[in-house]
Length: 580
Image (cartoon, rainbow, N blue to C red; front, side, top):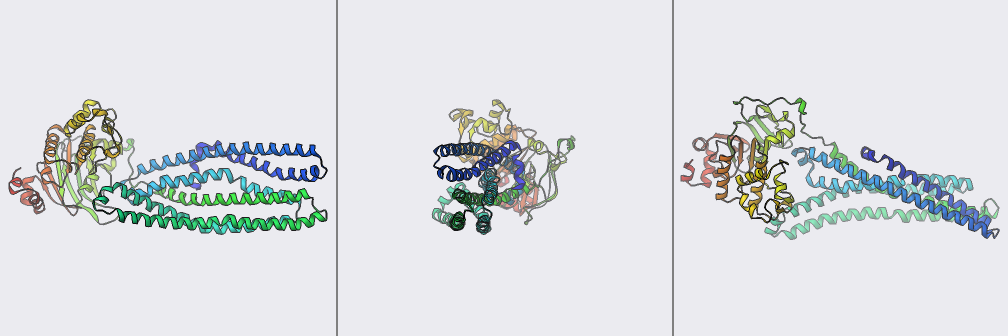
């Protein structure tokens, strides 16, 4: 938790005022038993109604002042805790965005969701209780001891014994519950993962009639989570009965020995009642402290998980603008060049091995190969979603690691395999890459992407609303809009990663024709499983198990590359294969 204190820096005033007013509330609370003792020993003993009313009014005033202090402390503590949670949540969200694809793959999406929601909520609750109780509870315990010692030193030994026993109970319960709280948070990760898989894969689950299996899997996980929560709940629930039993035994001891002290005149009846009140205050303070420790235990377990995310430093760093070298202006310099590039995911078997090729400005490069051959991996190295394990990827003769991310991704637009749209209007989605894009530029991109006609048919045109994830559009419509969004940026390099798979052959053909005639000067990479989609490319790269097995034009590869010829013949007739 101490590492996270820096997120309270904007709420220093609130962090001081909250505990300070709790401290004042505790002071008023400690005075009450003494006032009560005076009422019994003087007012009641002497049948002095006036004295009783005056002291009673004073107790009411103390209660009112305590209430005001308590409300003030609650307000400022809550404000500081909410500010802490907001700052921490924003910082973690920003940090997650700074991580590379590899970093996010390593920690997992579902656990990141749990940590930015549930874990931060626990940390926020911990800060709230710390500000309210961390100063008050110890002060009540120490203050009650001092006041009890002032009233009767010998009876204070009973207080000490009771406090030590209650502290021992709290310690045992805490040591058993803290590891369980950590396990519960890990189980929440699993629940989040299963929920996410089922919500995103609901169509597949229903297509294979696996609803019952998934319900059972979810129930098994939640039952295990429930068992852990019940177990830690049972341990925590034993806190109150044990502490109250010890307290009541302590009160019995105080009454027994205090009664003897009253009989011999060593202590008054009012002081004995005050001692019992102080013992009750000690118990309540220790119970509050125990609840604080339970919350801190959960918050600490969550803080460890939060700090794990912050400790994960981005594996990719970018150059500052001042350090960037100028790209080559030589027209003979390749637009994109791979030099002996190899890549593996988190130290696993190589996904790409020794890839070398060049793409000139204005060229269309087709990339084809079997499933798992490394096509997507290869194009993800161009915008630097991942860094090459070996070799270099260059744009305009400069290594992609030399570019600031913002500059690199202005040059490169990527249309991923899965079409992702965001809730909002068509126009808002089209402006994601270029905020100042005009309607004319948007319509031009839509026309090239073969999306203009269906957008015009939508109610509102560019102002038509798109639901979250584009659920109100077909798969082909979503793909065409994502292609148009990439084209709106007017990039120097366009990467289409199997992004026309949902289009019919006629629309796909029109799209490829528009790309070849209306994107002059743009270097286009087309990743596809369809031989027909890349056969007219200026250059075709054939991959097999991450290795380049052929590069050239369609006719050349038919003669020289058995893998390419096999792919073509599996999809096209002999006549179609022979046609350029």
